[in-house]
Image (cartoon, rainbow, N blue to C red):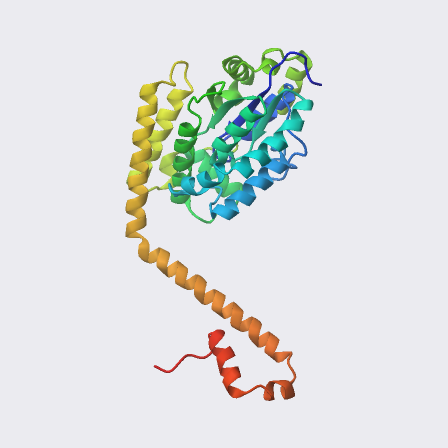
Length: 353
């Protein structure tokens, strides 16, 4: 039901996938905040559910595919690719029109998706246009545990170094994107460990920090439901950075980023001085990535050539299959010059030097 007198707010739960975003969204939804329906159904990687709207996941997948950006993308320039979509007026209108009717269910919504950080600017504008105040909660989980969890549940083949780099890229940008802006209602950083250890204390602090009336005035039956939802064993993957075997500079930068993020979760830790430190870390990451990309250019070119070769082979196989279905008397009637031109186009015959 829609409580009278409660102003519109949208809580955006951000952070890397496998960092506890589903747990936080699941808690606040059970305390009364509304996850727009339909929700993404549970699966083996998250049997208690994701607490994320299917429409949000679908539209983010659409935009990421258009921008050629992965969900866990380690490229600093990927933010410019998704940023171009964030500034499109039709995209902003589309999200605003989707948000608006959900406030009829409840004035305080929760939007969560591991892809969300790529489009936070767009969602901020869309929320404000509906008369809602955007607020942000970023989940913090040790990067080695995030990497290990992705490898365990998503069968990721890209390796620890890529996943650690994408974590650094994601969290440094999320920190930047959620800094206070006109029309915002604040932000918090929540440690996954704190949420599992004492969810009542952690969530109550979040509610007061962001002035979420649903959380502040929760009922006892809702609290009991969250107690049934929270599993002390949700932290099923535990590992350290040393377990990942990262390159030295990436290891150091990942560790430094985690140390500084932890300070944001402490009372009084979110300061202009801290923002300056994160600006320096982002610049350091860009330098590291550009250096690695320059050194590994041959590997990228080799992969591109391999992809082209596979595409030519698949096209040739398809053409042979098609040719086999053409009657012999029809093939014989095609002039030799035309047949040679077709073979050249398919890569099955080369021009003489």
